[in-house]
Length: 220
Image (cartoon, rainbow, N blue to C red):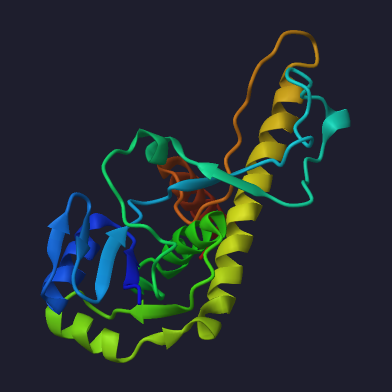
C-alpha cells in the first residue's frame, strides 16, 4: 500500500510538519517516513494559458479580437517550476493526498493545490489539514481532525473563479488599452493588471484627498 502524500504550500511548512510528526528522513527536497511523504509546492507552480486555437494571431491585438473569453483554461508549468531542480516524490503511487493550510492564505493555498491535482490528473482521495498555528502540538492536533475534501469544494470554486477573473481582466484590459494606444500606428503595449486587495500609495493618497475635499464641501 502506498504512502499518504502531504503537500504544503512552501518548504518551511513541509519542514515544520515533518518535525512535528517525527520519524522523517530528508530526501533532497521532500521528507519521507514509513507512512507519509511530505513535499511542498514552492508557490504557484502552474499558470493559466489559452487552449490551442484560441490565441489571436501575433500582432493582431485589435478591438475586433476582443473580448478574449476561452471556453476553458489549460495549465502549464510556470517559469519557477521550469527552473526548479532536484527530485520529487511520485504522486501516482500515493495512497491519499493531504493538503496543509493556514488561515492566512486559504484561497491561495487551495488554488495552488487544486491546480496540481488537475494538472497531474490525480484520482486519490483528498483530505485537508487545517492549521490554526504552526506549533508542533497544533500540527499533530490538525492531523487528528483532517477535513473531508467535499467540505473544501466551495473554497476551491472561489479560488478558481478569482484566478480566472484576474486572468480575464488582465488580458482583455491589456489588449484593449494596447489597441487604443496603437490606433494611430505602431505597437504600444499597455499592461493592465487585475484588481487586487492591495492598493498603491497613489490610490491611498487619492482617497485621502477625495475624503478631505468632501469634508471641505460639507463643512464637516
